[in-house]
Amino acid sequence: MSLLQHDVPIAWYLLLSAALFSLGVVGFLIKRNLITVFMSIELMLNAVNLSFVAFAYQWHQVRGQIFVFFVMMVAAAEAAVGLAIIIAVFRVRATLAVDRIDLMKL
Amino acid sequence: MHLILFFLFAGLCLAGAINLLLQSHPINSALSLIVVMTSLAVLYLLLGAEFLAIAQIIVYAGAVMVLFTFVVMLLNAGREERTLGSHAAARIGFPAVVAILAVLATVILRAQGLGAVHLGEGLTNSHGSSNLVVLSQVLFHELLLPFEVTSVLILVAILGAVALARRDDEERTAEK
Amino acid sequence: MTILAFVLWSFAKVVVVTVVLLMGIAYTVLLERKLVGRIQNRWGPSRVGPFGLLQPLVDGIKSFLKEDLIPAAVYRPVYLLAPIIALGCALISIAVIPFGEPDIGPHGFDLFEISNINVGLLVILGITSMGVYGVALAGWSSNNKYSLLGSLRSSAQMISYELALGLSLVGVVLRAGTLNLRAIVEQQATAGFATWNIFGGLQFLGFLIYLAAAFAETNRSPFDLPEAESELTGGYHTEYSSMKFAMFFMAEYGNMINVGCVATLLFLGGWTGPFENLIPPSDNVFFNAALSLFWFVLKVFCFLCLYVWVRGTLPRFRYDQLMNFGWRVLLPLAILNIIGTSLLLAYR
Image (cartoon, rainbow over all chains, first blue to last red; front, side, top):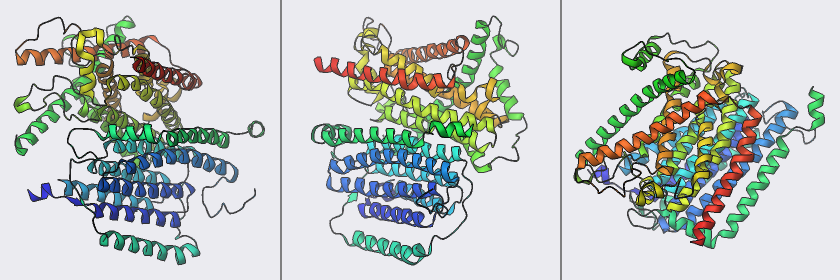
């Protein structure tokens, strides 16, 4: 019964958020595919959102949740533009490997 | 109950994120990111943010990630070659990541005054009432201007995406 | 109520609702075959059982016993995952759909809804938006150009029409002031059919937009381009056979039933009868329960008949027509509907 009513400390949520953020950074560093690199950025955004929601709970402030809402909207816009850029890059260079996309000019 | 749910979905989150790094095919990475996002939605529910949980599923898992899979399918991106990143990333990046994680963990664990999450309590601390009302009051009264600015931002992003991704006419005729 | 009783009651509820839903899916297939048969001036299935009523059983056994082919070139993990995602998303939505009065069960237990949550409508929209993955991944992992074309079409189509679908429901939400499906139904039920959202709520424009968008969301004719058999040899499920194909098939019909349930709840007054305000309420609990179930099932049934009727009547759209219709007609109309409804509410 104690297991059913046990509370979870906020700190654990924050730790999870930090771990996810670090995994996102690692993914950004080691992945060699443009799309997967972009996905790692989304993972970092999500990790930050989790800590926003946790802090909103901690201080009973609705602002934290609103911030997450704005982050989601901006992330959606960012994904649309980013993927359009990826498609444009792929059309010109015919590859998605970040190591091969190393010239500023065509 | 809360403890079990937290460990289940936090575990799913971490497993999904690690799988994202290990998989070499972009579609597998996208699927594991979807797992991360939906488990995060459940964690939002546990934190009493039901609107954000559903918005997370609709916006992130349902729209943004569909765009990702759509692009992966469209470009038919194959497997990537497995590397450990550039030298700079290996030398500076990983120690930096470990250092950031360590600093964050110590700060979080030593912080005073962080409470505990009690299941069924949201922002309003009362059972049955939705935090949707509180959320929309702040959003549409105090933060109306940022909200409208964001809508303009999204409009600009749509136009930018269309302009970037469309082919020029001469390109199209050259292909023919 | 103790935790044990709660768990047992909830489990029983889930089992009953799932079995009824699966039976409903099986007999919707039969309904479609019979009705389309009559529309085309033939009988439809009539050999197995009286009036062909055992046909779904035979169909099920057939698809179960067929050889399960997996083509050599498919991408196996995703290929196996896709039908599960499709069917799962089709079956989950029923969990938040109420189909009767709340206070009928024992000890105040909510017998006619698996889970009464305050963002029920958004949950249904979220699950619908996850349903794209089943179709998209199936087409991609099949490694077949027709499947890929079908899945590309369906992801573009479903994302486009999701907007119109969501926006068409905003008018109803504005009127009710809540996202709880129970509260939305109760708000419409004050004076029989005169206060239903489609009539008294002045949401007929929203209803029509919802209807069109829902046809596209469930990949039904006239918007069935992802599986257009005359040009794509079956679209995204070309490479699927046996039970996996049956899962896609069941998912399609499950989605039809879900859409019918949502339309019933949001526009047609849910489980309330059209003349409920005129008839004195009865004290008999069982009579009340049966009556609300009867009205709910009747409304969903009419909706399904409409689906079949449209399929038997209209030809398929062309792809550019489909996209133009979604973005240039449905979306502006939905926004117009929202503006009109909010102006009306503000005026009152």
